[in-house]
Image (cartoon, rainbow, N blue to C red; front, side, top):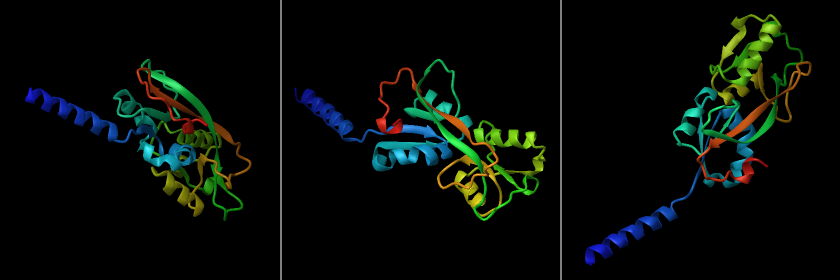
Length: 197
């Protein structure tokens, strides 16, 4: 009888410990999505989230392996085990430093990441091909914050999300890129409203 009571006490203690541990909503996304969409939506409740920053080409695996509850991606996945919850757009443009008045594309470095699935990289390469800009002007930088710093210092230009006030090159059309929110079909976790409002 004593053993049974001891086992029941241990089970109750374990249940109480699980209940007292904080419940996180785990999100995998890219640095640009975190900086330009997600950060303003989670900053007041940061303790409720765990954020994993990955390249566009790496986001699917943590969701497949159920290591995260949600992926916010530029890619629109067709995987049968995924469920799309929501989509929204962000605006991008070709950004330059405030100190530059005129921009000669043939004299500028175009800053991009190594990630071949990055929509900003794809947009940059397409623009360079359409305007016959040599590939030697492509400068690889994998940090979004460092890329922004280089642009602000006048050391290059880049297609990036537009934040006000922006230093967008006016003659280059503003474009929209879609963000997709995915979870697994088996997930029963509700997406926090702050992420989609």
